Amino acid sequence: LRKSYIEELNSEKDKFGGKIIGIEPGAGIMQASETAISDYGLEMELVPGSSAAMTASLKKALDSKEWIVVTLWSPHWAFNRWDLKYLDDPKGSYGDADHVETVARLGLKEEKPNLYGILTRFKWTHDDIQTVMMDIENGTAPETAAAKWVENNPQKVNEWIGKE
Image (tube, rainbow, N blue to C red; front, side):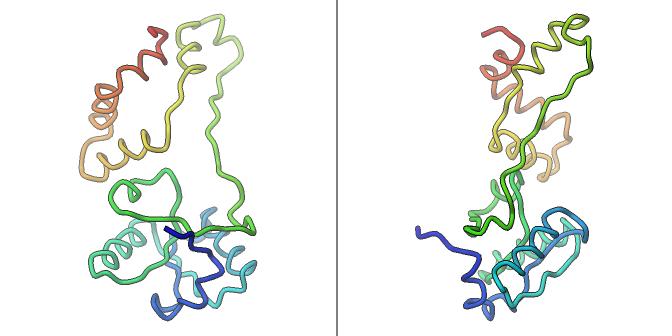
């Protein structure tokens, strides 16, 4: 499949009503979307709402095979439910990918070396996170979704706890 670019939105705007369906005003993705609209000279309206309203609009459009542009990020369960793609951002309006840092208090390594070891070895992918998120979205309790993931990923968990 060929890449699709943000700057192509103007030429296709009639297919989705010239709107980008957003989430809560003030969210980082909304600020980045405003930057992208300016950077690419988009003739688009960024429609604020909520995460739930955005995913409901996405579902409705996909179910009826309509075009839609939404503010979405990874990891997100929607990527496990539907075949979605990001628009390429050659100007870097959305910046670099975020990352998660593990932070521990001073002295933890000496006081709780096993816990500290787990924290230093803990790594999981967007796919791992999205799997748990998808189960929760489908109505599974968060603790149950996490336990299911642990049960289905013993090798990773064993690496984290130092058994591998």
